[in-house]
Length: 114
Image (tube, rainbow, N blue to C red; front, side, top):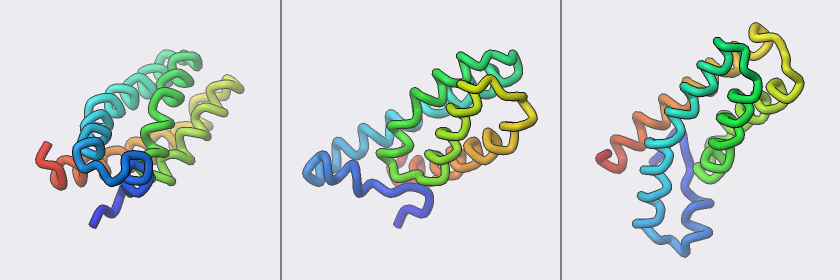
């Protein structure tokens, strides 16, 4: 049983299609880590637009995978980026998001032999 993600939404929209679920999980492993790097780079460069776009891009995937805590983090990051907040205000949230994604990546790769 998955601890860091929940595929019930994926199965609900796909009529329990296992292959579709694997495609969604594969998409997560390929795209989300790259966007996490973009968030990190955007923070370092004080590029709020880059942070916003990267967070916005991964939001649907996190929602689809039932990653509620990571989804909440990404909403906070989007809000922060729109407000052009100070880096120290969001650092812990980004760290939390990265940790949630890393935990899910490990679990997904193991569960799907990726």
